[in-house]
Length: 197
Image (cartoon, rainbow, N blue to C red; front, top):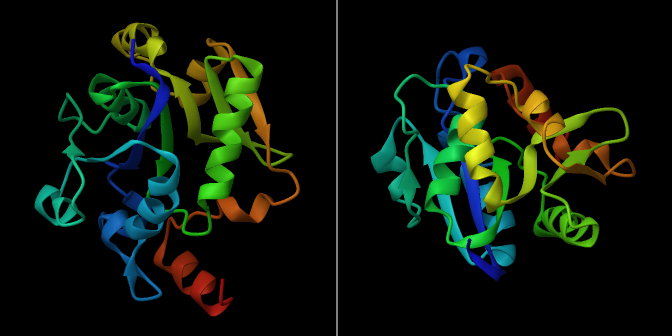
């Protein structure tokens, strides 16, 4: 059990980015800055300790001056594996999670996740844009670690299914769904830059 007044944070940058021709998404440049730097800027004001979950280019990620933690397995098991790794390193009662590829998300949006989870006394708060969940934007009680270990040990990988098995509440972002635009292809990156967002 971590400190109840502290929040650990993790930026998920451990995927294979198949639609990005296997480039490391967090290190791709958007408006002259690596994508991961936007997540760092959003996270730092709201967490006490921040780490990056990465499975490639660890030295490059270490240049950002934060702890870099790799998945406990080397098989790229998806975001839940990164979350479990972060839970193992968290020293707080709550872990805040976001991906590396959503440059429009700010500290204010992340605070909503933390506030909703606390207000509802839930295990997890997940971002909801009015139509769908954004299941890698999470505020998680670190006490769910054992349940997540069991879920992954059973061979399951789907984040949404795991969320259904927990006491999960939705944080409503229906008035600003566009902040969750994420960059999965180079075409999406170019389009977002052209929009001047």
